[in-house]
Image (cartoon, rainbow, N blue to C red; front, side, top):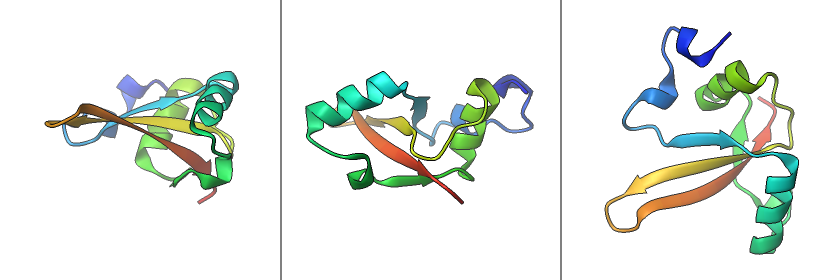
Length: 88
């Protein structure tokens, strides 16, 4: 199912930040730059609507994958955060 065919794509709502699924290589590079391990990242559940939309685009997303979240900010232009996909 494509994201455009969803009844309501939450990622197109103005108040929902952009979500991007990182490849394993991208995730390792980010964690290396930040000097972090995966378990130190904030969590996002597989049942989160944003993850569900990404699954409709990329296929099933396994636990342990990293999602990049880009929030728009009036003071910083944009703020980039990362989340670890967990069960739920």
